[in-house]
Length: 113
Length: 114
Image 1 (spheres, rainbow over the protein chains, first blue to last red):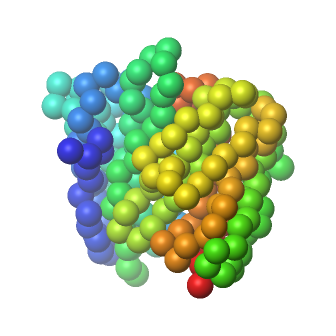
Image 2: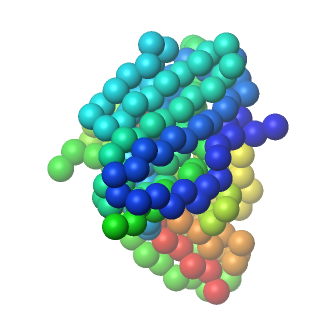
């Protein structure tokens, strides 16, 4: 079983649309959760951290459900510049032992005019 | 600019050649990582270094070696390149080994082995 599973996409939406991505993770001990954005032929960049209470950053809203081990990202009023691959990321929660992040395979979003 | 610097950005190797990918960070991070990214496979961890002086294997270490030269630098070596190692390689760093605050990535090295 993979550590992080994501909707594979692709999602193709018009400008102004609202789009949601979902992700599940397998390790109940995971402590940190993120959404990364990766543009074509570029490195992944941190979009936002995800907190238990949910958090918002402009048009982006992230939610975490620890009981269901489920993470979501909502993008409102999509822009052409939102076109990218979105990676769901969790840490392995091993605390003081060697830790690392696990990356989902990503969901590709294309916003068209 | 502060961040993670990888060199080279592009490389073409012949099968059997060796090379070292360089990575340096100037953010005083303790932990560093090497990933490869292939179409449809996502990011796969090759090796990581939780702190200066330690290194550990990730998911796909075969064919690679690493050196944590100092706190700033973490290199990846291909001793005898194979076509299966054609990929995009990303170096990343994090403040500490639990990665509670995420990673910062370098811009990548595109490697082709012919």
